[in-house]
Image 1 (cartoon, rainbow, N blue to C red):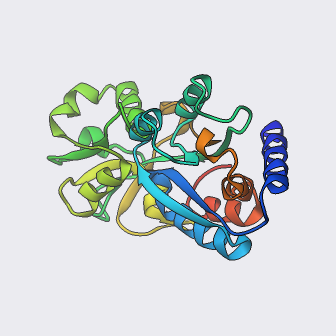
Image 2 (image 1 turned 180 degrees about the horizontal axis):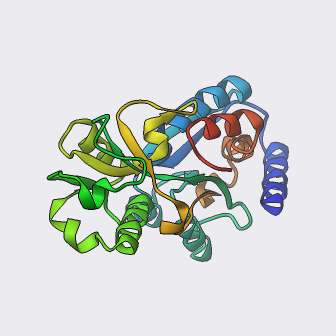
Length: 251
């Protein structure tokens, strides 16, 4: 990460020499699981720097396709580290700008305060007709959920009960509106300031799926945008990191 910070600082210094120091806008593609913390960070970022972050939320897989097709995003905040790495290898990311801004946690959640037990036994022993899961081909949290179910030996038996969302936001919507009794969502969607907001949950142990390392990257369209470089540096500062931690992410 230190090398990434050095690289970003060098890019930012070059941009400041080339452009007047003034407020600018940065277009940010944000993984759906990071919606709530990023809204708070963007608000604080604008207060502290004068720059404005224009946020778009969605599935990392969809953002990959959009970026490859020329979408003018300046910064990508992905839900994995694979997609930014792939984009960098394909020449769409400024070399050396990529770093992990958070490590996410997967949680099995229900609005019903008694349905999900702390050990997740409800998956094999509970009675429910629908379980929500994000599309594993597009959403890293969906891939982590499928990996978890495969390790538990439950993927095949639960498959008929799947309700699939395009991204983790859609998956959360299915559970929050009772279109599914429970579902795998991001901890950040149901957690705030160290407390479960409502319902019942099982935080999936990290040994049941690969780490959900979420990488940030400066895209080519943002190379000369001072707000883009400022945002990537700001995300590593104390204020942003405090917000990120408050939603249950590891750093």
